[in-house]
Amino acid sequence: MQKIIACTVLVAGLASLTACAPWPHVEHSRPSIAGRLLEDGKPIPGAGVFLGAKPGTNDPCGEAGDRVDVSPVDGSFQIAEHSNTLLMQSLLKPPDRTMQLTAVCIRRADGTAQIGALLPMFVDKPASVALDCEISKKRGRDDMGNAQMASPLGQPQFCRAVRVPRAA
Image (cartoon, rainbow, N blue to C red):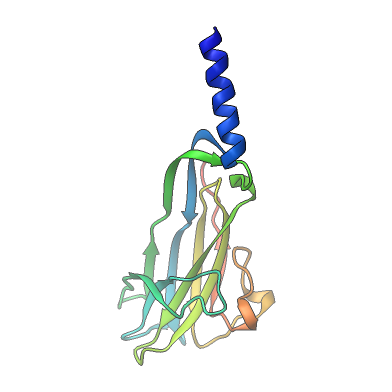
């Protein structure tokens, strides 16, 4: 019994020093995304989609992360959800209050990059998003959908992002 109490006190002491507790959980860092990339209603030859390497900065598409294949037939693309299993839980940043940003970026054939969408999500729940990217049309705040936030410094965005309900 004394060993159990001693171990409990030790774990509680370590948790208070590190602000972490042993609590295995899954953190979802990117939603699953299904989208279309079009210009004037047609697929864009040579254009591509990539994930921004620095989504929380003033230039989220300045550095390219993972590249995503875009169908030349209909402009469709898929981005898989990403999650990690963690063994420790931060006591200062609980998952239901921790937000992760995903920057979906568009690169034209000439190499210029633009913000398609900035997708915020809480890391405690998986999410699915449908993107409709029409790069001939800049999206205003009222036309961005319910799954994205305005870009830093008011930069234009070209995708409408809508959360897709997930089965429980």
